[in-house]
Image (cartoon, rainbow, N blue to C red; front, side):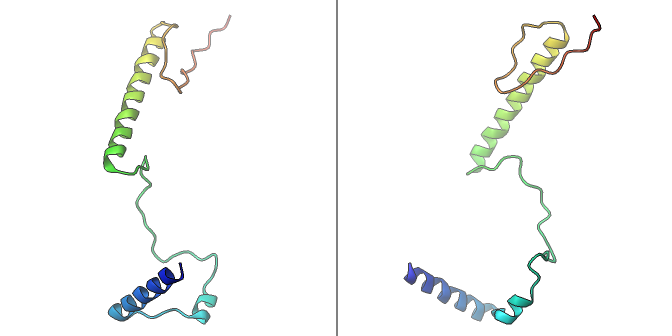
Length: 101
């Protein structure tokens, strides 16, 4: 473990020497505001699915598309009057219209 830390320190020192960057130092770190925000932040939205690979992400997209299509088809049948229609597992049917009795 200690050898790995020393290796990381050497790699960081070599990178600073290549780029010409310097270490902040204790005083500069203490001057920073702990609740401050970065000057620039990443603006891209979060992905709809976090996945280990592009193939898995594609499977999730396809599965979700299937789920939405099956739900919409069942909802359409329910609106047409078929109350025995089954919805995909994990979903709830839309509410039926209110009928005063």
